[in-house]
Each structure stands twice: as C-alpha cells, then as structure tokens.
Image (cartoon, rainbow over all chains, first blue to last red; front, side):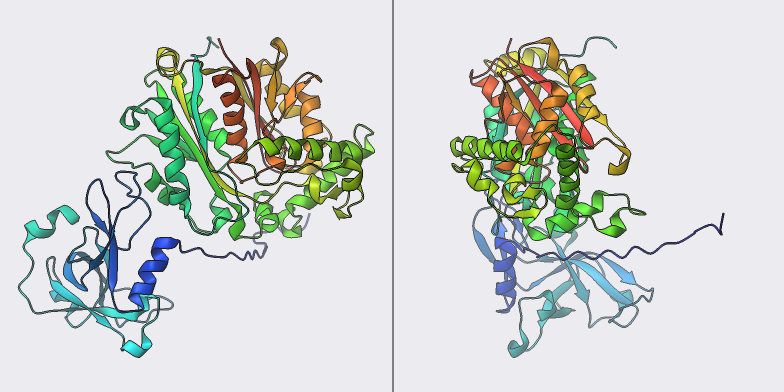
Length: 162
Length: 354
C-alpha cells in the first residue's frame, strides 16, 4: 500500500445561462435610466424593491409597478473591518439596509460620505449615481448612498420594515 | 408495523412543460400551479399542515434556489416546511410519512425544475460519485446507453421494442396538453434514424423540459370530506440500490421489484401505471420488475418521453395516476418515480378508489 491519499483534484466546470426574469429585467432597465421602480402587492399593499413576480408573504401575483425615490433611510447596517480578496472599498466601510421612500422592503447598498462610526439607524441618504453617460443595467450604476443632511427618520417610521 | 394511516391524493395541478421557459422565474412558474392545486383541494392554504418540495440547485446553478421558490408558498405566518434535493415524488413520500404521525391531516407537495439553463447531460454527472466516476464525465445519456446495451445483450429487449415504447408514448402524449413532445411516429421510420449514443436514438431519450407540479395530500375523514373520489395510497415504498452503476445488474431493477412488492402491486388488479422511465428501455425494465401484465395501460399521459422536467416528472406520474382515479377513469393505479443514475432509486405506490 502506498502513501495515504489526502487530496485529489477533480475539476468541475458547468456553464449556465442566467435568467433574470421579467421583473428584474424591468428593474435593471430602470436603473440604466437612473430610476428605481418597485411593485405593489395587491393583497398586503407592500412595495417590493426590486420588484418580483409574487408576494412572498401573500403568495399572490404582484400588482402595479410603482416609481420609488432614490432617497431613503438606513434601517440597519454593519461596519466591514476585515480585509478580503477582491475588496474594493477602503476599510472600514458600511454596508446598510436602505428603505427607499415609497417602498416597504429595504435593500442593501454601500454608505459613503460619512465616517463609519457615525452611521446610524434612521440616517437619511440619497443614491449617488454614476454620470448619465455611464449608466448601465447594473447596481454598479449607483456608486453608493450618501447622507442628505436631513434630520434622522423617526424610529416609528421604519420600525415595521426592519 | 401497525397499519398505516389512510392518506389520499386529493388534488393535482401542473404547468404545461416547455422546452425552455424564458419568462417566468421559479416563483412565477410555481405560483399558478400551487394556487390551482390548493383551490382544487378544497382545503384552505392556512389549514395545510405541512409543505414539502423537491428541486435541484444544480439545474439552474444557484445555491438555495429552493428557498427563494418558497416565495410562491407565502410562508407567513411561518409554516412547517421541508425540502428534498430530489424529484417531488420523494417529497410526497416524506409528506406521507409526516402524515403518519397523526397530528396533522393535510400536506402540500410541489416541485419545479428548469432543465434548460445548463447543459443537462453534464449537470447530471454531478449526481455520480465524485472520486471515481464523475471525473470521467459519463453524461446521463451515455450511462443510459450502457444500460440499454446491457438489456439488449441480455436478449430481453431489442431496439425495435424500445422504438415501440417511444412511439406509443408519443402517441399517448397527443392527448396530454401538458406534454410537449408528441406525435404519430412509425416504428420502422424511427429505426432508420441514426443512433444518438448507441444503442439509443433520439426517440429513446427524454426531452429537456421546464415545468412545475403540485399535489395536495389529505388523511382519512378530511380526504373524504374534500374529495368525492380520493386516490387513496394503498401502499408506498422506496428502495435504493448501490450508487455505482457497476455494482448492479443494470438490466433488472431489484429496488423497483421490492418496492412494488411492499406497495402491494401484485395484490390487486391494476388499470393504469404511470412509470417514470426517462429512457424507452427503462420502461421495459420497470414493467418487468413490477410484473405488469398486458392489460395495464402504461403511461397514458405519454410519460417522461413526452415531457421530462427534472425533479417534476416523477411527481407528475403520481399526479397523472391519481387524476385518473379522482375523475373516475381508473379504479386502481401504480405510480412510480425514479432517481439517480440508471434507475438507482425507485419509489412505487398503489393508488385506488374505495
């Protein structure tokens, strides 16, 4: 018997087409125009951003598409302190859940223009878009969100969206 | 073991299978199917005691895709839920076991599969043992061809027998709006086609299909209350053979044979059998293992040769068999589902009207 085999390599490579789906295609095309859109559930009335085909709470087909502002408030956030491969942002930086005005479901993005230690729940922020000529159907069309300088949103205004 | 609790299939819904679903995502594929199956069951969604699904993340190449598919269920308030990385028929088996506990009376079972987004023949290699077999990349058709060759060499079937299975299946599929490969084919003409992977021709192989299906199970009095003619599960059994195709006699399905005996296939007259045989020669092996006579109507839906959405085609066999009992066309049916390379695992049930 030879030496014990501890490691073998069996390379696996599979190619897939990725299907964004109707709603994500419409959402990303809106992003390429510098706009957010959502979709309202006809049952619970919540507006989802990005829009989706069905409401995960009510299990019904989503209703109307609605425009959503590029301003909102931070609901929760984390401070990234650990370097990692592929890191682009300078440490420490903040990754936050942002509740856009006119929507009910927060979505994640970066926060800049403020010290990480000063980011807080309720902080009012606005999307910083890339220049119009560089807009594309990708979330990278939004560089990050920056504080607007408005007073913080009161807790009651977002407590049901955490 | 004590006598199992009476459980029946009380409703079934499916999405018409297509070669490639380009618009709807998993949730959108499932939503109308779940809505229809629940509405037909006569049981309110909030009263369903258990939910179990079957799907495979390798099909669309995205981890935890079964979690996002739960959006179609509306899991709020929180539900009791489980998932198998297998065909939905095996989720049905889990739900049947769950109903044996006796504390709940109904269960929703569903599955979905989009086979069109990857190279299915290669994706299926991922189910093989990762040390010895998978590194050789024997694709799903090559492995099935080895099995077909062994069957022909045993003298128990010919390429003509296989073509006859394919022709009959695709003729039956003409009457099934949910199948997408169908037509009236002449056996001699089929045999003039070139081999795809010898001894298999294209007609011996299943189509690549996208689809979704759902079933509602109910126990005892609830089933009798919501359904005029429930498809009672008289017996159900799941058996597994060694993983390595080299360790088995590929020309016989010993797991199907045992599962069929345990499910009671031989104990009563069978009108209809819906067999999950993705390849034509596999129907011949399954019929033999189950001892089905010439009077049994096999795969009146067209079977997996008419539509083969991965992870859905097995559950669809249960739904097709049950539908024929529920609507009165059949009194007793065999439903079968398979999983793994070359019929490695097999689930057999006998469904009946009472």
